[in-house]
Length: 149
Image (cartoon, rainbow, N blue to C red):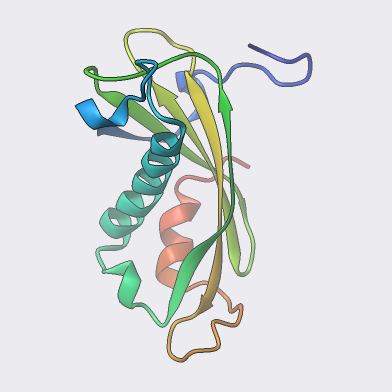
């Protein structure tokens, strides 16, 4: 379902890929992927990339990314048992935030079944304040590879 100003994303719109296995429990009573599971897939695509691209446990950095905003455009049904391919791209890198887009694909088609927006804001992980802080250089270097300017 495309809107006049928003095209349906295709595989060419993304830079990095991850295959995610669906599970029986991921489907809801209507036989398609539960809405909350889409957000789990977005979270997995982003954070697995960060762990792999940086080579560090991002949970233990002095600054950590917390999710400040998420959204999803549902474009067609997906569900168990086929795997889902998650495409990842970065739309914006700020001093303390990153805006990701994640496309979910299932089957041979070129058009996304869903597209998520996922915003990380970096905060202090050394105390209890959780005040906003510049992101670590290791994160900036990793996400720059995903950035389409």
